[in-house]
Length: 384
Image 1: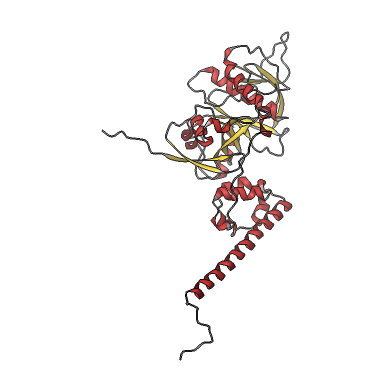
Image 2: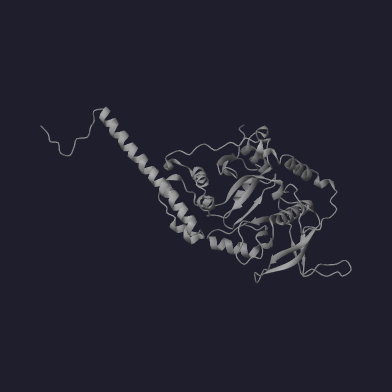
């Protein structure tokens, strides 16, 4: 009797350091930890690590990202991506201890929240208790209890950091809680997805990355401690410095054992970068017409054009397409004149290179004809 095996599905993972993309073939049920191990290779080859490797889900529309938990099903996550749009991807990143958050079961502090109806930002005092975010107009004192202005349930939601913030945002570092819906995102067009995102998520922003990381880690930790069927799986990042706005609780329980171990490993390897041998990507082929999309990203990096990376990735550009585009359309997509001029100069270099290669090929073909005695008749020769 033959045993039926589920078909393998291709999944692309981008290396956050090199921008190289690796294609894995995964079975249904493959966890993020297993996929990351397949991507990185044997542990002994990555022991000199500056931080902790995480697998991130990165969306272009809407512009959000989050680290996956070790036990999340990678193909299930992929199946929830917005349909018909490019730019959704997985990225493997080495996360340093200073850019992640400290998970706390009782966290409080001043944050900016965005309203649901009027979409205005207001400064509020927040507390996190039992997977609920409660916010107040003023600091609640023990001798003067007050009811919260509102309560945001966190169970059954995904916690995303915002990759971009709108101009009217009072702070630069934002995150949101996305409720679990079916489907997770509507089908295209892009405007419909962004409208859905804008109207269904709970938005918060803060003044620095450390504070954001602390709150995101704490919300995720409170979800996992809830042990409820509707809790969305996510990741508990390794611990870093405490949030400057947080009032820390007494967290002496053994639930923190694994987090503390992860943080200790990250801290102990903090100085390993100097001794680490960084493997450089192979040199690009001279002919850009042969480049795949990964090599196009490498070209952007070598030309110091990283700001165009997301747009190029979302469009799936390969080398031959670079010869058909100009910098003009990017001017209307938020790029400055200086950035577009720099891109135009780099594209012009590619045209010059291809022209030189074509000329060399023509000369080589002519030499081949001559060596074979098959010299094309000149236009002025006649027959005897």
